[in-house]
Image (cartoon, rainbow, N blue to C red; front, side, top):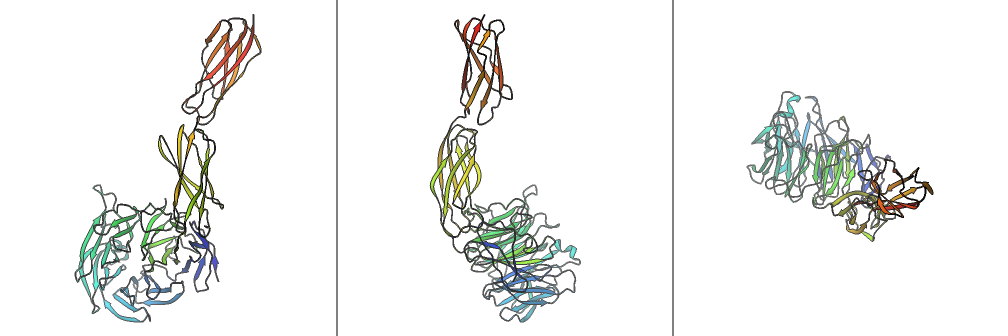
Length: 575
């Protein structure tokens, strides 16, 4: 039994499990409820070309193209839904694409000289079909009652990325027929609901502006219904395709674009969907994408390093802002990133299968993730309270979040905004403590009413809470003047008064200029103003005009963010 700990940043509870199986590692993993888990199996492959999921028989097929040499033997590793390896299928020469027929009874495999077929109940080889010779790796898709496959050919593997590739289909008599569609590069295929077939062109030397196309495969002739290239008039914005997927209802297409991130398109015309998905975390490059079969979730795989997430599970509805469940794959127990085209779901959406690879791309892992089946309610209770609100000084807004269901493995976070006369300002996130309390820290910079709004967007375990708001009256910061004066002075030597000025809150844009007044038995008059030094000190020198009590008053009027202040000192003046 092998149990390992891994570095993960998760928005869910942790579950540690272990299963005894050859090459199977089960590690601390995310869980949105008590039954969720992430099982990990080390794959017996040194390259990866395709992933297929047979929900009817609960089997997962992973293909090893092994195309380094003409004589290499291909391999298909077969696993059940719990991560146990069931068998290994060795094939003639290399093996690339995989596709299952509609009921999952036949597995189609892209071989070098033909299309191999296997009975998925017995794993016995069925009669193979002919196909054009493939030296670069095929892509397969089963749609409209037949298997479609690509046929690239190059004299050298170094030419494969930009070689001319044909789209062919497999006939019922195990022959093949060319569809007439062709272009340069390792064209990728994806089957979708409603007898739709999608073909995407990766970026390559002979395709500076690669295409994406959707076809109607319901008839004997493949009919293109939508097509798009993405570069603008200056050649910028071309797609860098790594993977593509149809939504569960077929109305949307998601594209993993290594440059643009996740593109969400309308299937009908491949126009941009009105609402798209948030950008991947900074430093993550899109590598794979897959919609759950039940339409609930979208899985997005990425190539990322360090603590940047490599896999995100989000609601399939882009308008749902629930925070995603995030996985960071790092090291010999996980792999380092999600392999291109390395994501597939079970038909019911209960399991996500993810193939990860190391940085060198010569080791692979199969992750079996069970996303949460339920979500729990959350709510803010007791309203918000605040400390004294002064412009330019720290302000603490406190509240409490309650949630049902299990406690999360890592603290939940709330987001906050402040709205004042200058608009709405994002304040970032605040961590929710174990008792549900949180503190939002801010430094308001405007006098007047400020409304604080705190939100909990939810996660895959907890539904979002209704926002809570709180209005605060922000006052001016205080200022102060302190004077040090002699008790007695003479008219001949004069009076020297020293002082200090201080303003709390936001620093003044310029040094304060203080007004100085003198009051004696002859009346009151204004003396020259004094500018406060950088350290807050100032000095007043005066030659009194008469004997007896003389009072000096120093004042500052204040500004938009600070209250004014004043101080006085009385000196007995002699001759």
